[in-house]
Amino acid sequence: MMGDNAVSQRQSSNFTGGLFSPREQAPTWSSPGCPTISSASHCEYQLSSDQEKADGFIKAIGPADAIQKQFSEETFEERIDCSGKCILPGLVDAHTHPVWAGERVHEFAMKLAGATYMDIHQAGGGINFTVERTRQASEEELYSSFQQRLGCMMRAGTTLVECKSGYGLNLETELKMLRVIERARQELDIGISATYCGAHSVPKGKTASEAADDIIKNHLPRLKELGRNGEIHVDNIDVFCEKDVFDLDSTRRILQSGKDIGLQINFHGDELHPMKAAELGVELGAQAISHLEEVSDEGIAAMASARCSAVLLPTTAYMLRLKQPRARKMLDEGVIVALGSDFNPNAYCFSMPMVMHLACVNMRMSMPEALAAATINAAYALGKSHTQGSLEVGKQGDLIIINSPRWEHLIYQFGGHHELIDYVIAKGKVIYKK
Ligand SMILES: N=CN[C@@H](CCC(=O)O)C(=O)O
Ligand SMILES: [Zn+2]
Image (cartoon, rainbow, N blue to C red; front, side):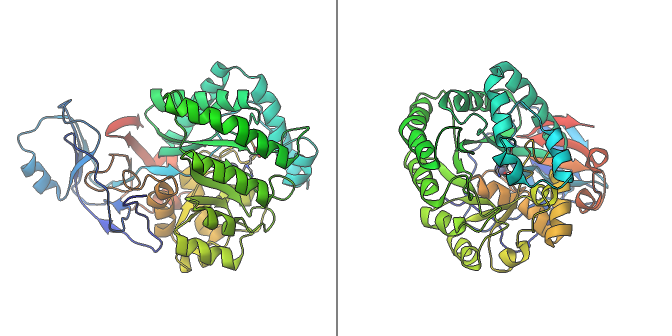
């Protein structure tokens, strides 16, 4: 990934004032980036009114006076007075399952009564329950609920989200889900990174190895063809590598075949059992591995040296009362730690501010580490940190404005983000205003 940046240690810097921007190519970056936070007393955000120039990329960042002087000849569609407020990068959600029919509130009750995730999965519930309903749902139904969910994420500050298929398992339904994701990519303002997750569960009547064969022989060639025709755009390939789901060998075969058709490897590993998934991911050149509650010490060291990011999912560990992933050890060893909401029928959470709060309390991350993990590092996990994830000149104008002079309130106020977030802006366009 050329010039892809991320931070493996806490970093932050300040700026005052910002402006969007003439049409320019987003540059690639060779130096480490950082999410930039503004909390100046006199701070302004300006959107260009010149359609030629309003390409949604950041033109300048600096003291408001200097910016005013530099652009004194320009006219602006809108000026937002951010005095006493904070401007932060738009939040990036690095792991979600947002396209499905068949919610599972009844399973929440079962889990509260003591059932484990795998008890329910093996009894035909869990992913398999949602697969049945998603297969029956029309494309229009799936799109409509997906669009509403993206709206909830956006209002909680998310401007870029990874979206997985994986509740179809057969080719027909996986493609239906990917078409729904593609439509949202085309029609909506929120940024989307699309993931093919046909190996999310082993379909009834097949072994893991047979399911892997089907994916390699039938699903991936079709994805390649649709990608070439421009009908569907898929960025990543995912497998649920887990005991009694996809073993290491089937996972390796699927991920390698996905990589061979140009997809980035970004998969579920070492969640409920130690699988040596991290070691496998590094061997295959994975961009990211999610969960990692059961990762080995060797896996952590290998991920750090390979710059393979760890996507940690605090809602899942919380919901399922799993042991927490060892975020501190990962950070101390230099792993690029990112965060995701894991929104799915098991972990029903749209909010990256709540995810950051849980990461701080339960995984012992600091607030700057959590913010980096939910912005620049999450963008890195999606291979997009050269264009998104921080406030830098030439990057996409994805940002949020919060009504507090201290940015930390976005994390500190657990569940308070709806009151705090005044604006969400994606590619220079206001997509939510309180
Ligand atoms: N672990 C596998 N996949 C999801 C859960 C999906 C579901 O239960 O529907 C996860 O990341 O938590
Ligand atoms: Zn997941």
